Length: 142
Image (tube, rainbow, N blue to C red; front, side, top):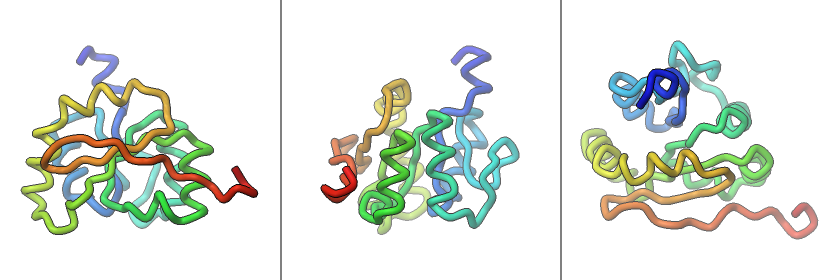
């Protein structure tokens, strides 16, 4: 990373994995999370408050919340703000350490994805990165 890249945030870790976000932010200056000193998103903010920020700031979202892809308000925001998301699937049964190890193990594979335009979604498991279908809106709205 050059100095400009170091200062520019590229990743946002959802509050549902705050310990992961804090661990990554401690060693990577391009990672933000709710409550981070360089992040305008407060702890306790609703998904509908931070999804526009993540998309408009061209950040990659790291989250365990698969429901974002299914709740209508979040789907609308995900698409409207071209959010780029990596969903940590199967992470609900992992310890914090296992989750951190999984992310670090595959970091080099998903870091280049940050340069792709959104919206897009991927899954991250111990086996690696997989494709996910983008959320879709009901026909009357799409």
